[in-house]
Image (tube, rainbow, N blue to C red; front, side):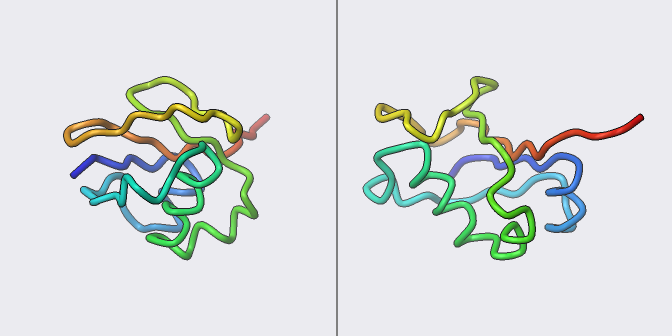
Length: 85
């Protein structure tokens, strides 16, 4: 399993700051498909309209990234846009 951390609005929507999840590693080949899998596991994230980025072990994942390696014990994060004044 991997640890998935939530920040800001994503934390509010999911109702917790982190979750341990199992990912189907055969089901994502790009950053975009990894993002889709996270949204399938947490449908409430649809309220963000795709406006968030993912990180794997504190490295941003771009939607077009093709060689994503996620293994047991890794940390993923959902990072929505930050706003404030």
